[in-house]
Image 1 (cartoon, helix red, strand yellow):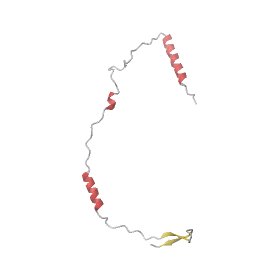
Image 2: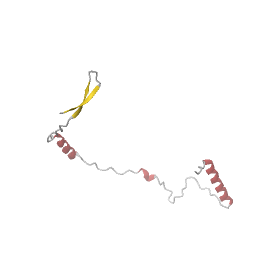
Image 3: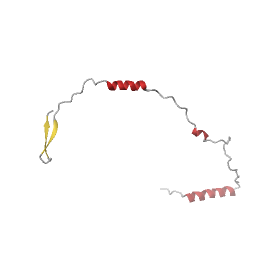
Image 4: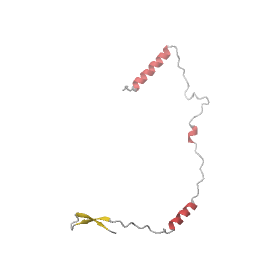
Length: 105
């Protein structure tokens, strides 16, 4: 596993690179505050706050009416439950389970 460089080590490396650049004949120019490398010198983030125009809402009154009409209609026929036997728990006088019994409906 590679050891992670600390901020102090990174800072020292950058300072050494700057010193080597200056020692090899390079020069650092002073640039006034507020000047940009952008050709137009315009704010690139100014358009980030634009909003889309409001969209028209879709009216759903017809849909709501049709849903209400279906809700008011009576169901065709109630579903019949199958007459399968079910298990019933038999308990004693104290509520302790004794056994299970199959009961016909």
